Length: 634
Image (tube, rainbow, N blue to C red; front, side, top):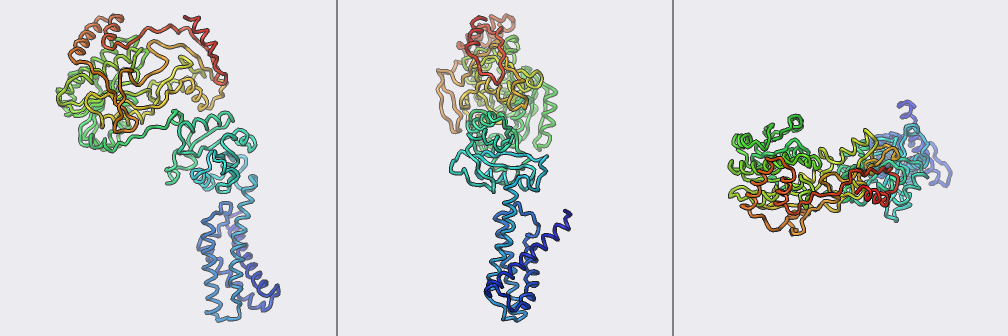
C-alpha cells in the first residue's frame, strides 16, 4: 500500500475509534439512549481534532504496531490526557456548554484508552502468533533461537525487531527453569538449553544466537557442544556493555571464536600502572614485526613513550607494522637489524638514547631448531648475552626477556635456549639495569602457531595433522600475552621470572575438532591424521620446575618463581664453552654442553614418525588402535 494511502487509512481509523468512544460513553451515561444527539454530534468533531493532533504530537499515528511496547503505552496516556483536558476546557469554558455531562468526559477517556491501546496490542499479538503474517519476506526470513533469556536477550530481540525484521526469533532457552513459559519482549521461553536439539527441530530453526555475554569459557563450551549436537549454527553477542551502549547491531553478531573456547575466562590485567613506567621514556622492541612484538608495539603506543624503536630483521613484516601504526602521534623508528650484530645494536641504542628494551626476538619453532642448533644458540643465547651487555653499556635501565613454557624441563633445543636465557637474565649482575623474564604458553593465532596451520590445512587439504591424540598445551590470547609482558614489566623486580596462571591445558585434538566445526565444512569431509611426536616435542608442557616456588604477586594470576639462582661466574664460563662448541658445529657436543647448563634437558624421544592414523572428527578415538600402532612402530 502506498505511504499516503496507508497514512490516510490510519488517520480515518483513529477518527472512527475516537467517535465510537464518545458515542459509547454517551450511550452508557444515558442507559443506551441517545438524548440531545445534536450536542453530541457538535462536540464529537472537536474531540476528534484534539485527539488526532495530540496523537500526532507524540508520534502515535505511524501504524507500525507490531512493535508496540511500554513506551508507546506511556505516550498514549500522555496524548489522551492532554487532548481530554483541551476538549474539557473548550466545551465547558470557551464555548460555555454546561449541559455536556461531566461523566461523559471520564467515560470517553477510559473507552478511548481501551480502544486505541487495544487495537495496537491486538495487532501485535496477531503478528507474533502468526509468523506467516505480513512482515519479512518468508523466502528471505531467518528463523533463530536465542540462548539466554536475560537482559542481553531483551536487548538483542529489540535490536532484531527494529533493524532487521527478516530475523524471526521463534523462542528463547535458558538454564533458569523458572523462566520457562514466560516471555521476553513477546518471545516465549520454550525450555532449557539442554532442550535445544529437540526445540530446534520443533521450531524449524537452523541457527542459535548466544546472548550470554558474561558466560564463562566452560559455559560457552557447553553451549557450543549442545548447538553442535543439534546441527545448529551459532553466533554470540560480543559483550553486554556494547549492547547497552548501542555499539553492537545484529550485523555485528560474530562467530564463536577460539578465544571463547580457551577452557577458561581470558585474564584481564590492570595496566594503569604501566603508563607511569613507559610515559616519556624511549623504548625499544626487538622482534617487533612478530605476533607478540607487533601487538606489544601497538599497546605501548597507548602509554605515550617519548619514542618507540621497532627492530626486526624481517623487512616485509616490519614494513606492514610501520603502516599499521601510522595513526599514532608517538615518534616511531623502524630499524631493519639483527640483534646479534652488537655494533649495529650499540649504534641504535646510543643514537636514540634507549632506556627500556622488550626483547621478543628469538627463533621459536621447535622442530626447525632441532635441525639448526648453531643458529638457535647464536640467536637465542649468544644474541641475548650480547644484547644485554650492549644495553648495560649504553645506560639502558630496564630489560625484559620474553620466555616460554618450553623452558621448563625442556625436551626441545629451542626450549633449552629459552631456559638458558632465563638463567642469564636472572644471574647476570648489573648495577643500573633491571632485568627480568616473562614465561608463558602458546599464543592463539600467532604466526606459525598451530591454529593458523590447522586452518590452512582445513582449507587446502581437508585434513588436519595432529602429532598425538593426548598432546596438550597451555594457550593464551595475544592480548593476554602482551598484557602479561607489560604487567610483568611493571611489578617485576631484578632477576624475576614471572608466570601467568593459564588454567588447565587444552587438548590439541579437541581444538582441532572445534576448528573443523567452526569452518563450515561438513565434518565427514575433514580427517584428522596422527603423525607422531616430532623431534623435541613432548606430550605436555609445564609452567614451573619442581624446585621452583610459586609466589603470588600484586597482580592477579601472575606468579613469581623463586628458586636457587645460578652463580654468574660459573654460568659465564659455561656460556664461553658453549660458544666454543657451537663454533665446531658438532650437534652431540653442542647438546652435551647445553645439558651441562640445563641438567633437566632430555632430548632422547621414542621414534613415532611412522605413526599415521586417520580419524574422522565424527568417529570416537580408538586409543587401543593407537597404542597398538605405537608399540609396533617402536
